[in-house]
Image (cartoon, rainbow, N blue to C red; front, side, top):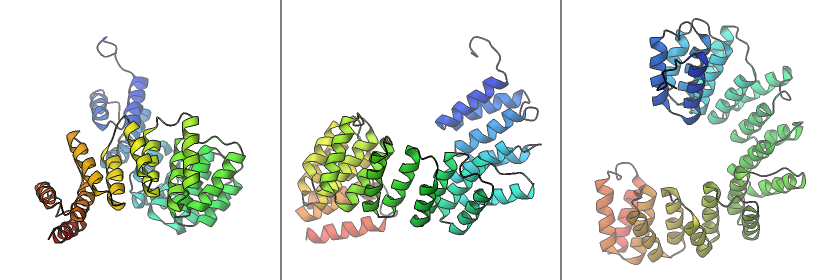
Length: 365
Protein backbone atom coordinates (compact mmCIF):
# COMPACT_ATOMS: atom_id res chain seq x y z
CA UNK A 1 0.00 0.00 0.00
CA UNK A 2 2.84 2.36 0.89
CA UNK A 3 4.76 1.44 -2.28
CA UNK A 4 1.64 2.29 -4.26
CA UNK A 5 1.72 5.76 -2.74
CA UNK A 6 -1.56 5.36 -0.85
CA UNK A 7 -1.62 7.25 2.46
CA UNK A 8 -2.53 5.31 5.59
CA UNK A 9 -5.55 6.40 7.60
CA UNK A 10 -6.88 5.55 11.07
CA UNK A 11 -8.17 2.11 9.99
CA UNK A 12 -4.85 1.26 8.31
CA UNK A 13 -2.88 2.06 11.47
CA UNK A 14 -5.25 0.29 13.86
CA UNK A 15 -5.39 -2.90 11.75
CA UNK A 16 -1.61 -2.90 11.32
CA UNK A 17 -1.05 -2.47 15.06
CA UNK A 18 -3.47 -5.35 15.74
CA UNK A 19 -1.49 -7.48 13.28
CA UNK A 20 1.75 -6.64 15.10
CA UNK A 21 0.09 -7.53 18.40
CA UNK A 22 -1.15 -10.87 17.07
CA UNK A 23 2.28 -11.98 15.85
CA UNK A 24 4.19 -10.37 18.73
CA UNK A 25 6.21 -8.15 16.42
CA UNK A 26 7.23 -5.22 18.61
CA UNK A 27 9.86 -4.09 16.09
CA UNK A 28 7.32 -3.59 13.31
CA UNK A 29 4.98 -1.99 15.83
CA UNK A 30 7.65 0.54 16.74
CA UNK A 31 8.06 1.46 13.07
CA UNK A 32 4.33 2.07 12.73
CA UNK A 33 4.40 4.02 16.00
CA UNK A 34 7.08 6.31 14.52
CA UNK A 35 4.81 7.06 11.56
CA UNK A 36 1.91 7.76 13.92
CA UNK A 37 4.04 10.20 15.92
CA UNK A 38 5.08 12.05 12.73
CA UNK A 39 1.40 12.58 11.96
CA UNK A 40 0.67 13.59 15.59
CA UNK A 41 -2.11 10.99 15.73
CA UNK A 42 -1.38 9.67 19.22
CA UNK A 43 -2.61 12.83 20.91
CA UNK A 44 -5.52 13.42 18.54
CA UNK A 45 -6.94 9.94 17.93
CA UNK A 46 -7.94 7.90 20.98
CA UNK A 47 -8.54 4.68 19.01
CA UNK A 48 -5.00 4.71 17.62
CA UNK A 49 -3.58 5.54 21.06
CA UNK A 50 -5.46 2.61 22.62
CA UNK A 51 -4.25 0.31 19.83
CA UNK A 52 -0.66 1.34 20.57
CA UNK A 53 -1.03 0.59 24.29
CA UNK A 54 -2.54 -2.79 23.40
CA UNK A 55 0.14 -3.64 20.82
CA UNK A 56 3.05 -2.94 23.15
CA UNK A 57 1.34 -4.86 25.98
CA UNK A 58 0.72 -7.93 23.81
CA UNK A 59 4.32 -7.82 22.55
CA UNK A 60 5.61 -7.84 26.13
CA UNK A 61 7.02 -4.31 25.90
CA UNK A 62 5.21 -3.36 29.07
CA UNK A 63 7.27 -0.36 30.11
CA UNK A 64 6.47 1.32 26.77
CA UNK A 65 2.82 0.32 27.04
CA UNK A 66 2.65 1.76 30.56
CA UNK A 67 4.42 4.97 29.47
CA UNK A 68 1.90 5.53 26.66
CA UNK A 69 -1.00 4.60 28.94
CA UNK A 70 -0.12 7.35 31.41
CA UNK A 71 0.32 9.83 28.54
CA UNK A 72 -3.29 9.35 27.47
CA UNK A 73 -5.44 12.43 28.03
CA UNK A 74 -8.49 10.18 28.36
CA UNK A 75 -8.15 6.59 29.61
CA UNK A 76 -10.84 4.46 28.08
CA UNK A 77 -11.61 1.02 29.66
CA UNK A 78 -10.03 -0.49 26.51
CA UNK A 79 -6.65 0.97 27.53
CA UNK A 80 -7.00 -0.16 31.15
CA UNK A 81 -7.86 -3.67 29.98
CA UNK A 82 -4.99 -3.78 27.50
CA UNK A 83 -2.42 -3.00 30.17
CA UNK A 84 -4.00 -5.28 32.80
CA UNK A 85 -4.05 -8.19 30.33
CA UNK A 86 -0.51 -7.40 29.25
CA UNK A 87 0.72 -7.58 32.83
CA UNK A 88 -1.24 -10.79 33.49
CA UNK A 89 -0.14 -12.52 30.28
CA UNK A 90 3.55 -11.81 30.88
CA UNK A 91 3.72 -12.84 34.53
CA UNK A 92 3.34 -9.46 36.23
CA UNK A 93 0.30 -10.35 38.30
CA UNK A 94 1.04 -7.89 41.10
CA UNK A 95 1.19 -5.00 38.63
CA UNK A 96 -2.12 -6.11 37.09
CA UNK A 97 -3.85 -6.09 40.48
CA UNK A 98 -2.30 -2.74 41.41
CA UNK A 99 -3.56 -1.25 38.15
CA UNK A 100 -7.03 -2.59 38.95
CA UNK A 101 -6.94 -0.75 42.29
CA UNK A 102 -6.00 2.45 40.47
CA UNK A 103 -8.79 1.79 37.98
CA UNK A 104 -11.25 1.68 40.87
CA UNK A 105 -9.88 4.93 42.31
CA UNK A 106 -10.60 6.58 38.96
CA UNK A 107 -14.19 5.25 39.09
CA UNK A 108 -13.70 3.23 35.89
CA UNK A 109 -16.06 0.26 35.86
CA UNK A 110 -14.46 -3.11 35.09
CA UNK A 111 -15.97 -5.25 32.36
CA UNK A 112 -15.68 -8.91 31.38
CA UNK A 113 -12.25 -8.42 29.80
CA UNK A 114 -10.99 -6.76 32.99
CA UNK A 115 -12.08 -9.73 35.09
CA UNK A 116 -10.49 -12.24 32.70
CA UNK A 117 -7.15 -10.44 33.09
CA UNK A 118 -7.49 -10.17 36.87
CA UNK A 119 -8.36 -13.85 37.28
CA UNK A 120 -5.33 -14.76 35.18
CA UNK A 121 -3.19 -12.59 37.45
CA UNK A 122 -4.59 -14.24 40.59
CA UNK A 123 -3.92 -17.68 39.12
CA UNK A 124 -0.30 -16.88 38.32
CA UNK A 125 0.20 -15.44 41.83
CA UNK A 126 -1.73 -18.26 43.54
CA UNK A 127 -3.65 -15.43 45.22
CA UNK A 128 -6.75 -17.33 46.32
CA UNK A 129 -8.06 -14.51 48.54
CA UNK A 130 -8.15 -11.93 45.75
CA UNK A 131 -9.49 -14.61 43.43
CA UNK A 132 -12.40 -15.36 45.77
CA UNK A 133 -13.18 -11.64 46.05
CA UNK A 134 -13.36 -11.44 42.25
CA UNK A 135 -15.62 -14.50 42.22
CA UNK A 136 -17.98 -12.81 44.68
CA UNK A 137 -18.01 -9.63 42.59
CA UNK A 138 -18.73 -11.56 39.39
CA UNK A 139 -21.61 -13.37 41.08
CA UNK A 140 -22.95 -10.09 42.51
CA UNK A 141 -23.02 -8.54 39.05
CA UNK A 142 -24.47 -11.71 37.44
CA UNK A 143 -21.57 -11.74 34.99
CA UNK A 144 -20.66 -15.43 35.13
CA UNK A 145 -23.17 -16.44 32.48
CA UNK A 146 -22.61 -13.44 30.21
CA UNK A 147 -19.44 -14.77 28.58
CA UNK A 148 -17.99 -18.26 28.72
CA UNK A 149 -14.42 -16.90 28.89
CA UNK A 150 -15.11 -15.51 32.37
CA UNK A 151 -16.28 -18.88 33.67
CA UNK A 152 -13.32 -20.61 32.06
CA UNK A 153 -10.93 -18.08 33.63
CA UNK A 154 -12.50 -18.64 37.05
CA UNK A 155 -12.10 -22.43 36.77
CA UNK A 156 -8.48 -21.93 35.68
CA UNK A 157 -7.77 -19.54 38.58
CA UNK A 158 -9.08 -21.96 41.21
CA UNK A 159 -7.16 -24.85 39.64
CA UNK A 160 -3.91 -22.86 39.62
CA UNK A 161 -4.52 -21.98 43.28
CA UNK A 162 -4.85 -25.74 44.01
CA UNK A 163 -8.54 -25.37 44.94
CA UNK A 164 -9.83 -28.11 42.66
CA UNK A 165 -13.11 -28.58 44.51
CA UNK A 166 -13.95 -24.91 43.83
CA UNK A 167 -12.82 -25.29 40.21
CA UNK A 168 -15.08 -28.31 39.76
CA UNK A 169 -18.00 -26.53 41.43
CA UNK A 170 -17.71 -23.49 39.14
CA UNK A 171 -17.31 -25.78 36.11
CA UNK A 172 -20.41 -27.79 37.01
CA UNK A 173 -22.46 -24.59 37.32
CA UNK A 174 -21.47 -23.22 33.92
CA UNK A 175 -24.58 -23.14 31.75
CA UNK A 176 -22.55 -23.55 28.59
CA UNK A 177 -19.32 -25.53 28.39
CA UNK A 178 -17.13 -25.50 25.29
CA UNK A 179 -13.95 -27.44 24.52
CA UNK A 180 -11.87 -24.74 26.23
CA UNK A 181 -13.91 -25.19 29.43
CA UNK A 182 -13.16 -28.91 29.50
CA UNK A 183 -9.51 -28.31 28.64
CA UNK A 184 -9.12 -25.90 31.56
CA UNK A 185 -10.59 -28.46 33.97
CA UNK A 186 -8.54 -31.36 32.57
CA UNK A 187 -5.36 -29.29 32.72
CA UNK A 188 -6.14 -28.29 36.31
CA UNK A 189 -6.39 -31.89 37.46
CA UNK A 190 -3.34 -32.98 35.45
CA UNK A 191 -1.15 -30.11 36.69
CA UNK A 192 -2.18 -30.93 40.26
CA UNK A 193 -1.05 -34.57 39.86
CA UNK A 194 -4.60 -35.93 39.72
CA UNK A 195 -4.40 -37.56 36.32
CA UNK A 196 -6.87 -40.27 37.29
CA UNK A 197 -9.62 -37.69 37.86
CA UNK A 198 -8.68 -35.94 34.61
CA UNK A 199 -9.22 -39.21 32.73
CA UNK A 200 -12.65 -39.65 34.37
CA UNK A 201 -13.61 -36.13 33.27
CA UNK A 202 -12.41 -36.94 29.75
CA UNK A 203 -14.86 -39.85 29.62
CA UNK A 204 -17.67 -37.46 30.62
CA UNK A 205 -16.55 -35.05 27.91
CA UNK A 206 -16.71 -37.80 25.28
CA UNK A 207 -20.07 -39.03 26.55
CA UNK A 208 -21.52 -35.54 26.17
CA UNK A 209 -20.24 -35.33 22.61
CA UNK A 210 -17.81 -32.44 23.11
CA UNK A 211 -15.14 -32.52 20.41
CA UNK A 212 -11.53 -32.64 21.67
CA UNK A 213 -8.80 -30.46 20.19
CA UNK A 214 -5.00 -30.55 20.29
CA UNK A 215 -4.92 -29.12 23.84
CA UNK A 216 -7.30 -31.86 25.03
CA UNK A 217 -5.10 -34.57 23.57
CA UNK A 218 -1.87 -33.12 24.98
CA UNK A 219 -3.41 -32.77 28.45
CA UNK A 220 -4.85 -36.29 28.42
CA UNK A 221 -1.57 -37.78 27.23
CA UNK A 222 0.10 -36.09 30.20
CA UNK A 223 -2.59 -37.49 32.51
CA UNK A 224 -2.17 -41.02 31.17
CA UNK A 225 1.58 -40.72 31.46
CA UNK A 226 1.36 -39.54 35.09
CA UNK A 227 -0.81 -42.47 36.18
CA UNK A 228 0.95 -45.09 34.04
CA UNK A 229 -2.17 -45.91 32.04
CA UNK A 230 -0.42 -47.70 29.19
CA UNK A 231 -3.46 -49.24 27.48
CA UNK A 232 -5.45 -46.00 27.71
CA UNK A 233 -2.47 -44.08 26.32
CA UNK A 234 -2.19 -46.40 23.34
CA UNK A 235 -5.94 -46.14 22.78
CA UNK A 236 -5.73 -42.36 22.80
CA UNK A 237 -2.81 -42.56 20.35
CA UNK A 238 -5.08 -44.49 17.97
CA UNK A 239 -7.82 -41.87 18.36
CA UNK A 240 -5.33 -39.09 17.61
CA UNK A 241 -4.38 -40.76 14.33
CA UNK A 242 -8.02 -41.50 13.44
CA UNK A 243 -9.01 -37.84 13.97
CA UNK A 244 -6.11 -36.50 11.90
CA UNK A 245 -4.24 -34.80 14.75
CA UNK A 246 -1.02 -36.75 14.23
CA UNK A 247 0.65 -33.92 12.31
CA UNK A 248 0.43 -31.63 15.35
CA UNK A 249 3.96 -31.14 16.72
CA UNK A 250 2.79 -30.57 20.30
CA UNK A 251 0.77 -33.80 20.34
CA UNK A 252 3.59 -35.84 18.81
CA UNK A 253 6.06 -34.45 21.33
CA UNK A 254 3.73 -35.46 24.14
CA UNK A 255 3.34 -38.93 22.61
CA UNK A 256 7.12 -39.33 22.65
CA UNK A 257 7.19 -38.22 26.29
CA UNK A 258 4.34 -40.59 27.24
CA UNK A 259 5.96 -43.64 25.65
CA UNK A 260 9.29 -42.75 27.28
CA UNK A 261 7.57 -42.62 30.69
CA UNK A 262 6.01 -46.01 29.97
CA UNK A 263 9.47 -47.38 29.10
CA UNK A 264 8.28 -48.18 25.56
CA UNK A 265 11.35 -46.65 23.97
CA UNK A 266 10.98 -48.26 20.55
CA UNK A 267 7.53 -46.67 20.21
CA UNK A 268 8.94 -43.34 21.41
CA UNK A 269 11.77 -43.54 18.85
CA UNK A 270 9.34 -44.49 16.09
CA UNK A 271 7.15 -41.41 16.71
CA UNK A 272 10.22 -39.21 17.15
CA UNK A 273 11.51 -40.30 13.74
CA UNK A 274 8.20 -39.29 12.14
CA UNK A 275 8.44 -35.73 13.45
CA UNK A 276 9.23 -33.23 10.72
CA UNK A 277 11.04 -30.87 13.11
CA UNK A 278 12.98 -31.78 16.25
CA UNK A 279 13.64 -29.11 18.86
CA UNK A 280 15.93 -29.46 21.87
CA UNK A 281 13.04 -30.38 24.19
CA UNK A 282 12.12 -33.40 22.05
CA UNK A 283 15.75 -34.52 21.85
CA UNK A 284 16.07 -34.18 25.63
CA UNK A 285 12.97 -36.33 26.23
CA UNK A 286 14.45 -39.12 24.12
CA UNK A 287 17.97 -38.84 25.57
CA UNK A 288 16.57 -38.78 29.12
CA UNK A 289 14.40 -41.80 28.35
CA UNK A 290 17.32 -43.87 27.09
CA UNK A 291 19.52 -42.77 29.99
CA UNK A 292 16.89 -43.41 32.68
CA UNK A 293 16.11 -46.87 31.31
CA UNK A 294 19.74 -47.97 31.06
CA UNK A 295 20.22 -47.63 27.30
CA UNK A 296 23.25 -45.39 27.67
CA UNK A 297 24.82 -46.13 24.28
CA UNK A 298 21.60 -45.04 22.57
CA UNK A 299 21.47 -41.90 24.71
CA UNK A 300 24.94 -40.90 23.51
CA UNK A 301 24.03 -41.86 19.94
CA UNK A 302 21.11 -39.43 20.16
CA UNK A 303 23.52 -36.77 21.39
CA UNK A 304 25.73 -37.30 18.35
CA UNK A 305 22.72 -37.09 16.01
CA UNK A 306 21.54 -33.92 17.72
CA UNK A 307 24.92 -32.25 17.31
CA UNK A 308 25.28 -33.42 13.70
CA UNK A 309 21.99 -31.65 12.89
CA UNK A 310 23.25 -28.41 14.37
CA UNK A 311 20.92 -28.38 17.38
CA UNK A 312 22.79 -26.82 20.32
CA UNK A 313 22.56 -28.96 23.51
CA UNK A 314 21.36 -27.32 26.71
CA UNK A 315 21.86 -28.05 30.42
CA UNK A 316 19.47 -31.02 30.42
CA UNK A 317 21.15 -32.55 27.36
CA UNK A 318 24.55 -32.39 29.04
CA UNK A 319 23.19 -33.66 32.35
CA UNK A 320 21.69 -36.86 30.93
CA UNK A 321 24.57 -37.41 28.52
CA UNK A 322 27.10 -37.14 31.35
CA UNK A 323 25.07 -39.62 33.40
CA UNK A 324 25.27 -42.06 30.52
CA UNK A 325 29.03 -41.48 30.23
CA UNK A 326 29.40 -42.31 33.92
CA UNK A 327 27.37 -45.50 33.68
CA UNK A 328 29.34 -46.64 30.62
CA UNK A 329 32.73 -45.58 32.01
CA UNK A 330 33.15 -43.49 28.85
CA UNK A 331 35.69 -41.07 30.30
CA UNK A 332 36.90 -39.72 26.93
CA UNK A 333 33.39 -38.71 25.92
CA UNK A 334 32.77 -37.39 29.41
CA UNK A 335 35.89 -35.21 29.29
CA UNK A 336 34.83 -33.88 25.89
CA UNK A 337 31.41 -32.94 27.25
CA UNK A 338 33.08 -31.39 30.30
CA UNK A 339 35.05 -29.09 28.02
CA UNK A 340 31.89 -28.05 26.16
CA UNK A 341 30.11 -27.35 29.46
CA UNK A 342 32.96 -25.12 30.62
CA UNK A 343 33.16 -23.38 27.24
CA UNK A 344 29.45 -22.52 27.38
CA UNK A 345 29.73 -21.27 30.97
CA UNK A 346 27.01 -23.64 32.15
CA UNK A 347 28.64 -24.68 35.43
CA UNK A 348 27.96 -21.26 36.91
CA UNK A 349 24.29 -21.53 35.93
CA UNK A 350 23.43 -24.94 37.30
CA UNK A 351 24.81 -26.73 40.39
CA UNK A 352 23.13 -30.01 39.39
CA UNK A 353 25.32 -30.14 36.30
CA UNK A 354 28.41 -29.76 38.47
CA UNK A 355 27.22 -32.63 40.68
CA UNK A 356 26.67 -34.78 37.60
CA UNK A 357 30.20 -34.05 36.40
CA UNK A 358 31.64 -35.10 39.78
CA UNK A 359 29.55 -38.27 39.74
CA UNK A 360 30.63 -39.08 36.17
CA UNK A 361 34.30 -38.61 37.03
CA UNK A 362 34.02 -40.81 40.14
CA UNK A 363 32.24 -43.59 38.23
CA UNK A 364 34.94 -43.47 35.55
CA UNK A 365 37.63 -43.80 38.22
